[in-house]
Length: 215
Image 1 (cartoon, rainbow, N blue to C red):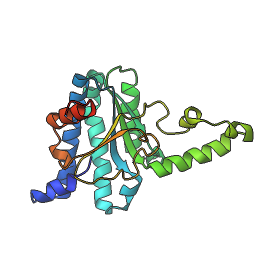
Image 2: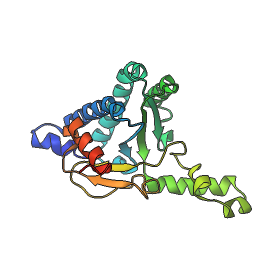
Image 3: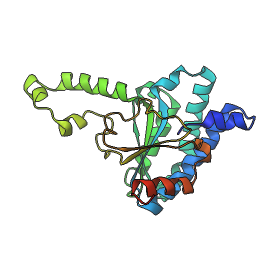
Image 4: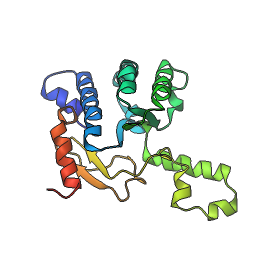
């Protein structure tokens, strides 16, 4: 979901307002997905590289995430959206944010509509490194020798998440930026110039039409 800061700069607004606008765009997308038969949506919300941003921006992003999680809990439950998280949440374990995220996950765990996977403190290289370490700790030599794609997947954050049919990046950049590198091996990659806060249902329809060979 790229382009929040550029969207704000183009409007002479603080970059933080771009992040707020980005949350609004995601909210609209979550509401639209069920209308098009989409069962899984993964949103790259905070990467392992985002810790390198200015401390004030990092604090704002994490505070905004907690604020939105608490505010949207009731709505997401009523809209039958199931929320979970992929990434290393241990960085937040002693914080109020962690409690809010766990409450959101637990409150929506029995929902059967859209599965919303929030990638938080996520990086694909970190994920693969952690998978390697878990394999070394939990498997013996013979089990490691017999590892295949299916069994390897059980050591990833996305163990219960299907591979994505399409990976979409807004904002004009044409790179994956350490996102779902293993899972996206056979995905269609779509890159659009639209900045994330301007992403609309119309853009979603265009992406789906392209994916399904309509355009």
